[in-house]
Image (cartoon, rainbow, N blue to C red; front, top):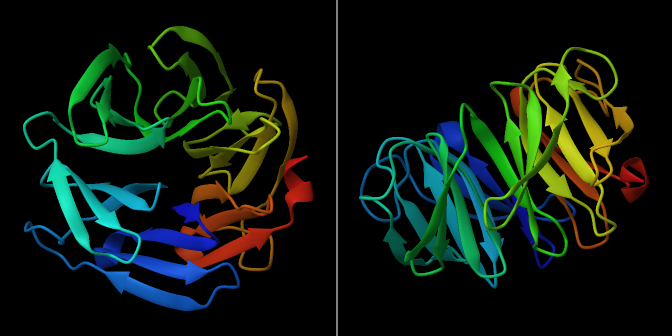
Amino acid sequence: MAIFNGEIFVADESNHRIQVFSSEGTFLRSWGCRGWSPEQFCFPQSLAVSNGEVFVIGEGRERVQVFSREGEYLRSWGEKEFRCPSSLAVSNDQVFVADSGKMKVFQRDGTLVQTWPLPDIQSLGLCSSPSGKVIFVADSRNHHVHVFEVDGTFLHKFGVEGTGHGQFNNPCSVATTASGNVLVVDQTNNRVHVFGEDGVFRRMWGCEGIGPGEFSHPRSVAVGPGGEIVVIDQDNHRVQVFNATVAD
């Protein structure tokens, strides 16, 4: 999921399409269907929007597809570069793709810039800091969030497996607020954590359920232009929006 110019872009994985909604939840448009050709997807699982372009990766045919925000196909690349890409983020006009134990960094046109190792890390979510100088990697296998400089220099990690405050069971998505706080979707524990950029736990919210503020395997988090927090509540088949104060 990503937010751009007040629109919410959702990778509708099992329906093999991208859906776009207004910030109030009104459906605006969608594109894509299952297949291998340009403009088609096989379980699109990660997307990012930057400068009006939508970058999408999925399972099967390993590539990055790029569209206009209206859904017009622009280009694709990476079919010979990837083994099993799982998540992507765009920062400072560079595209970061987590791919089978490696981070691969590209220019927007698909030119490979650098590669650095992600040893034993299974990433389902990436994001950058507000400055664009730091990359956060959600590691669902080892229940950590890893923090790197954009050149691959490891800085630190935070989180351990568990159910307590600041502990994870399958962290699968990360996002940062304008103030630098880090939001982490703790999927199997059905909640969202808030950390400082230094990895210090601040607060969390959510529990298993179907009511407002409750989740059933939340999948993704993003921050809107007004600081609102948007969460894809996967198994409840909905998007929930929270006031910015939950991320303070």
